Length: 482
Image 1 (cartoon, one colour):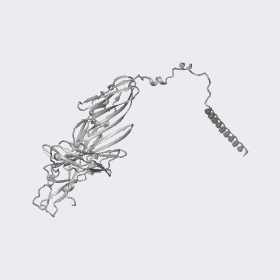
Image 2: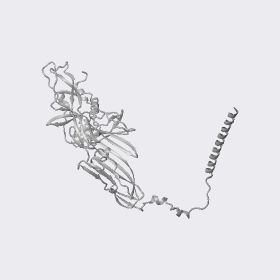
Image 3: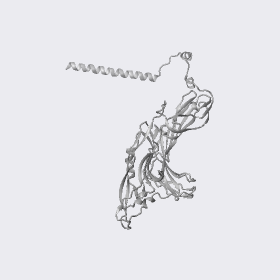
Image 4: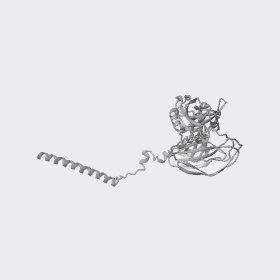
């Protein structure tokens, strides 16, 4: 075997996910440089108007360990044109307190290198991290000459964080491999990308909207089951939102791992490991989906925990002059299902369709973000107006388990003359009898060019008819002669 079990295990696996867009604009940034013990340092690659085919080269930082990669997607719709920006976020955790230097570095995206500025990073109290793979390679040698099959203390599972949800309510699905801290067997990942693709074809619910967390590097997290500590290696995590009331059924799935048998007697020159395979099977899982309570908008509302952010809160304007108003829904829920606020038409304002901007963030198992509706208003009447008379947004509040409505607090202070009916009065020239006294009794000849055009067309028709008539009678005369 050319590659040792340790080297194969440390290699892990990468999964690359792309997002649709057009064009290309890429920048590399560093996050907050003064962090507390429970915070992470981040390097952020933002890709505007481009499809991510591959990326690599996030730097190692002395005194830090990599803690996996998150992603964020922002969608803008302006005048009907959509743009998508994706952020790829590499997280780091400090091993101990102190000041650290990150030199300038490069990250490769879609085959091209992009430069990132260095930084000085200051961290809080110390916290050490043990090597997550130590237990794999400390299995004691036994006095024998043959290979032995060490019993593994590990399992494969597909889990959800909820067993029951409302239609439209989120639940997380995680696919992961778990290894006990007491495990003595030597295990390694095997063709994770291909296995995951086959598993997802089988288990991914078809009746749900998916927000994928885009795991592209297998890194361990410590979890506890029944008082026993395991290292969790996530290979897939996503948030799903049921689109109907059908129960989500997740069938069992198989996951194959490399497992190495160990020689009873370790030899410096001999073969101390024998490669084998071990297949692990997850348990079936179901998530019951409950219908929303009766409501006229039950099939249209978003479900989640939302609040309204708006600006400006106070606007001063003149009649006939436009001003903008931003109605922004923020919180956790399926932002793609967030429709425009209900708009009440009035004689006081003209409203124009909004530009829409959507920001979706996926991090630490939570999907959250905002959807902004930017309206243009033209006041037609002077006075003070509460915008809650014209805008409202209904949703199902998961904290209260009831329907709720977001209404503006903003006010518009309008001055100027009333423009109500102005469009009609400007074009109204009075009734028929009002016009009699204003009209001239002189006969007006038609436009000369139009008359000539008409006469020319008539002459052409006469010529065509005459030609057809002559041809017809000549034909008859030849027939009689014969």
